Amino acid sequence: MQKEEKPFAGYALFDMDQTLVPWDMQMYFCNYVLQREGWRRLYLLVFVPFLPLAKFLGDGTMKRIFFSFLCGMRRDHLEALCEDFVADCIPSICYEEVLAEVEKNKQAGRVTVLNSASPEFYAVAMGKAMGFDYAYASKMIVEDYMPLFPDIDGGNNKGAVKLGRMTHLFPEGFDPAAGDVLENSIGYSDSHADLPMLRICEKKVIVHPTAKLQAAADADGSADWQLVQPARPTANKKEWLRACLKQILGCYQTH
Image (cartoon, rainbow, N blue to C red; front, side, top):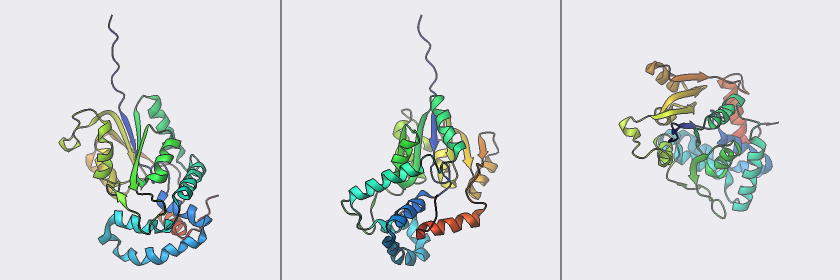
């Protein structure tokens, strides 16, 4: 008697910043570095003058300018800092409820994928520490000594770029542009920038969503959207922004 094949269990696709963790990890990592090497606050002399031009320059260029706080750092030193950073952060700063979803999806047999706009040099290690099968992030180039404005290979890992990074994992012939949807699959995000990733999943879980993402869910009107609101470390948006400012200054106390 021929053994009956089980249907494919699907995928679980996760954003990281403000989805699995309550912070923008780029700022959180900056805070981590500056608290250990305070002189690197000099990067603010470079970064702050570009802030009025942020909308014109775009997210990718502003990311390169922001990471000027790593200027001159040796590759091996950066790798050691990232290793310590991940050990300190995972799982302590994660939303317990969302991190539990990773394990739940693994137990259900889904392929788990972390897909983040953060740089690979710490984000991929974070994905591994959280138990993901695959992890993708912005390919910020790490040189022997970090330049003032590190290059990003392939563009900022956001929106359509993020989707393109993982399509090789999907079934042959799968075409998001044609409206194809992954069966038995779930997407998790906080941001409207992740709508391309969410829309290829049968179920969408939105975590403290942006107003635009919530509006998209409301406009869809289907039961395929689930709202999740785990407890945050800050009481409101104003308090969160104040904490982010402290992080880019390197004076946010994490413990």
